[in-house]
Length: 292
Length: 297
Image (cartoon, rainbow over all chains, first blue to last red; front, side, top):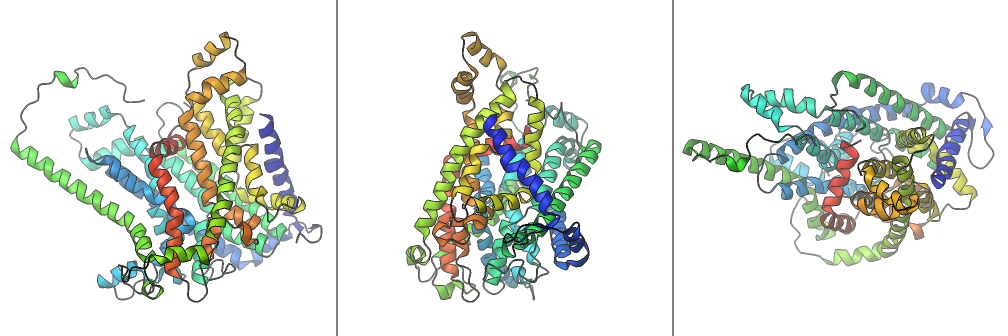
């Protein structure tokens, strides 16, 4: 245990305490931290429009991306339970995009969704769409392109749902068949309740991950803007919470402000997680306990 | 584990009745529809890979058109990638980080997971809750002070900040291993204890061999994390092109005007390739590992 205890102290406890302290200071790394009380927090909430933009962007990617990923994961996992033959081949293909390194995947999507020569808009033109979205080049559509990138890499979520689906006792479906239940009814009253633990797990992990969404947003923005400083391009539409924190801390070296943002992030994450855990008792059905 | 109810009559005892032609047709039609849908989704999911590879063989001019197939076929893009960015050096840097931190994660996390699952001691439950809490803690909360510590140690623009922390245990790996160790029957350890084995011997000779699938999954996840990570390298070696990792190196292709898409796609393909080969080699480990994180948690 002791190396872990040292690690826990050095890499967790000490940084937590000192980042809380820094959050009440002005600290630019060059001179020592100057205590300024709640100034960072006051500025963040009342005078920093980009902070609020980052909050809105992050809420979008969580509120749209996480549920869509869950729905798509359930659909793909369900499809994998259909065939008698070829399931391994399909499973491999469905999972494969999740293996693509995120930087490479994001760059690929910036190319594929390019408004003038990408295949996606080429296809949309062929289908008769007059003015298809310009995706990564428009503030209104850039986040949607990232949502699609998230759906492409559905594999990890899908595998967990697949395991959940295969874990549903057969007898429940047989009983439903005897009652004469239709397929949608079977899904609604047998499958769905049985996979609520997986849905809950995906919601929590997805929300925590959403607040820390960085690599794909960073890569897409600088691929479109062309320079490392082009974070959030176009027009801050890809300025997510963690990207903005990175910008404040490691482009501007405002360590105090970045620490304050980190603590606000931590508190928001905890509140969201607690709300989900509290409300989960109403809709999540566990067979046996959580810690089997 | 929920499928254990034995059927009253085993399948071999049922005499199959010949299937009526109508049902058979119906079944064939359904199966046809199933496979059509599965193939369509497969095609959509594979398409981006195809576009990346196709573009990687195009000329620069053709990459900026809507055409889908390279003409002329220009495989020299792949050799040009190596001269445009220092791909070999980036690969070497990335490999160093990935291999060393994977070793670090394994030798530090296995004993902790062992202590949390197979030894009884005061405070064990508290320690486990702390590990779970660490899992929830956003990286951003600790990163600023850690960055400052690494600045003071003179470790910025070195690979050390990307490797050393792994040797002090990783919460996710500890959690995953602990969950797996819990499933190994206690009698296995008891037998070794009767023979006078120390805890260390029980761990290395009994538990570790039994937990190979989980250990393999942890090693793979840790390796992939380092291979894919952008945030860490950006912070610690982002200003030293000598120490760039592949993830940072790829972003070097982005230019304000005139991004060389064909080279960028060739480099992307090269970076995807090892990971995809790794996936094919160790698919079972991956899928069991992902399942372990999600279902037994």
